[in-house]
Image (tube, rainbow, N blue to C red; front, side):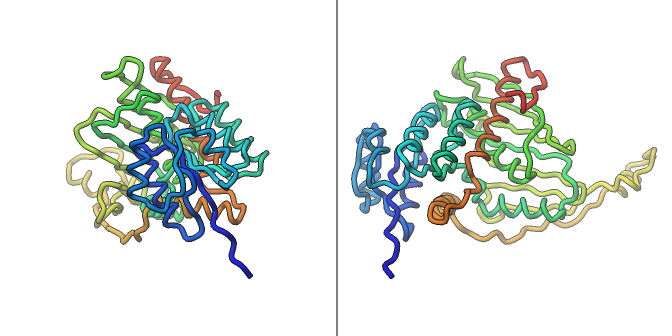
Length: 347
């Protein structure tokens, strides 16, 4: 029996993230890179020099989508173009992997999700942290109850740049954190209050703090900023039994589990001394588990190809992306309304 021919995947957008996706496709044994497309000819030349297996280049996104040899299209273009390009690709009969967020409006994201279902096409969204082994490890800690009931989650995602003009820091950065928190808790937020400030561009918030409330009264605070001296990618999860920090910048120890908690049941009504207070705080060890390797970008591409070949719904499906966009849109409405408490389900 002859093996199935490799999938041909065209790629649109070779800016910050696109070349990583192209490289991962080129390395997959069951896929090949067809046409790569970018409006900047210098980017095309650079990527082709680094990945000589590329078949063809183009500066025409729609022609790249319409290519009859392509089974799928990967889209890594500015956020404002996602809706139109994804819609064109689905209508052309292509499977699609698009960078996050899926769209800038909830109704557009829902339309694309429904269109993918109608066309029987795979639509995956680049919430790449769902393929991070550290993120998956923390989810297992929460699911097995090792941390106990979750009290709150605090996420910080900051850097000095990159400064975008097509979306604010909320849509660019917090989309990662919201997808992770939804993934960990297995649910979506109920409400949000958010505050943003635009220091560099009066129309685009470069610093945002959003406070989400999840079922079971779990609080999740998300801090996103392009205007910070340090690159931080850290999320703290505080459970009633244990606490954990996921630090994506710490290559050697991305996960630290703190065997610390407060014994609420034995807490006296009146703490008469510092010593009495200390007795009710459990101070344990810090455990640094081994987290297996694997590049999240490659894991994501592998999963996308597997889903196409097996007709399986991806874990980073359009439905998941719609949930994230609903949460972002609610935070946006709260920001524009002087941080008023906003229900996520209102739109």
